[in-house]
Image 1: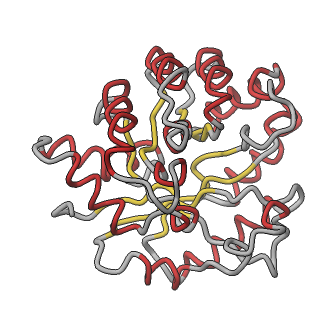
Image 2 (image 1 turned 30 degrees about the vertical axis):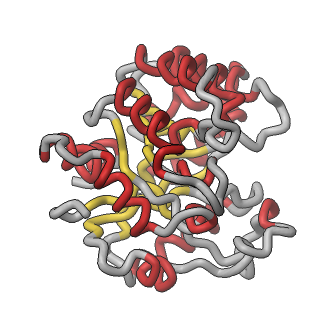
Length: 285
């Protein structure tokens, strides 16, 4: 356990009674209310300085409702400092009024995520209007969260090469194929991100990409080391991905695993990874 407070840069809360979240249909484990009281219970004993909420792939038409839901929750939890909202960046210039509204009326919004992983078009990340929408985020000082399946990593790397001056955050290390014990082509595509100095990587949720019930620390070792090799501690961001992570790992087990894995790493690097980098990317002060 780090001996300083951490920042959890990837937190979800949701209430399917109030907001339409279509992907949860048939998913009994996830289709219930997850709120900050549940989060506090699951992270008890961990010193958390701040949290960043990341959108939950709610249905189109619910994007602003989700932001307001999180803002209400943050009134009772001052550690909830920032929101990564959803926006239809594939609309290109037409998304600008919505981005204007987020910037002007919802100051907790510090970034945007539009889930590439679940789009029916496998080349969604390559669409010119989508790339234009991502590039537009530079005008707002918003980051962009790159959430892809490992099979889409080549397109995600192309996106990273096509935009400039936008803070890109690769969620969950690109969801490597740990369950299948494959290293390539994921590792090769990960290395392609190195060329864009504005790209960061969240080291989070790897057990979910492994065998949920039977994974071991050895199963994750290569993938963690590869992220460190490509991004270094100055471009890695710590996160839990609660409550999604609970399908395979508790928050305490995840942070303890990383603590063991990074034994001997200089404190300055650990402080950057566990807190400082998230503070910079999400402008937490």
